[in-house]
Image 1 (spheres, rainbow, N blue to C red):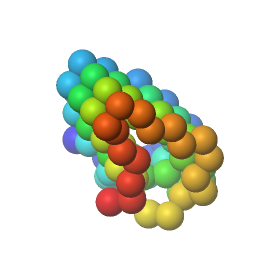
Image 2 (image 1 turned 90 degrees about the vertical axis):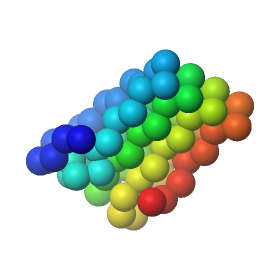
Image 3 (image 1 turned 90 degrees about the horizontal axis):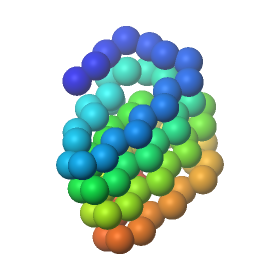
Length: 79
């Protein structure tokens, strides 16, 4: 878990990792999750996300949704 604020946030999570960043207020977020990973982000601007291999990307708030790519039983959803 990480809190605070950031401009542009980039998250690359793999191998079953967990990135709980819902308390980190970011302007924009670019997320790539693979291999059963779980990522939560809190962007106020644009969210670009790719989830594969049974991974889950969750986002807090109502960002502008950019590129969304789900495959292999993965999901990208608002929390």
